[in-house]
Amino acid sequence: MTTKPFGLYCPTSKACEVLLPRWTIQILGELWGGSSRFNEIKRGLPGISPTLLAGRLKEMQENGLLQRIEDPATGNIDYIRTDKAAELDDILRALAAWAQRHITAEIALEDRDADLLMWNIRRQIDVDALPPRRNIMRFNFSDATSPASTYWVITRPGEPVELCASDPGFDIDLYVETQVRVFTGVYLGRRSFERDVEDGLIFLSGDQRLITTFRRWLTFSMHSDVDDIVRVEYDTVGA
Image 1: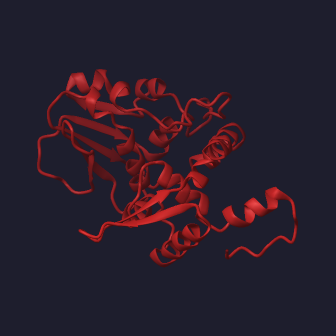
Image 2: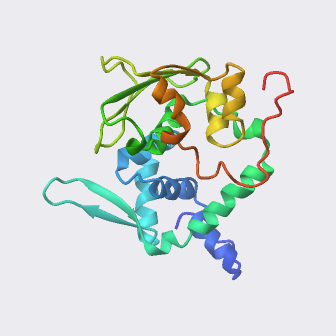
């Protein structure tokens, strides 16, 4: 445990000593979201260095929050949440709901990392709700601050969703033109998808079936339907 003890017997303080080291809760969130490999966790948390991530994973294993599983045949290593960590799900969900209700949209949407947004978007695509073929969707973000601003999502029946930051060379079925701040806002439930499409802040073109069923095959964050979310004020300049 790297956090200096508070010197208090309060159970909440003791829990904080385990959970407060920087990135611990965020790593739990990535594991909860389905990441299990080191590089997957790192991509979902671009602000953490590989050295710090390795150290934090080791500490979390020592604290009984995750299990390190190595495949002897391939050498692949997966990090899996323990039952002890899974008990925190309701707490993490409540923290996210609190943030959705009490942190302003301006602060919540200040980061404009398109890579991180698309890493999360790919998890929300329901392949079974798409036409049973290969589908190529191209997302372009005019305000991205990440190295890439254009991404290609590739889906095939029965296969994991692929995310590319370089052109895979296939014909595009759906074009999505928008901004990171806009699509992040929609993804988090801070903005209205319908309103932003109507206002031209999200522009869809290509296969009409994909356009019509967009909200069926792409679901937004599990926290986007929290009651009383602090939403963007559309009458504010620049919203």
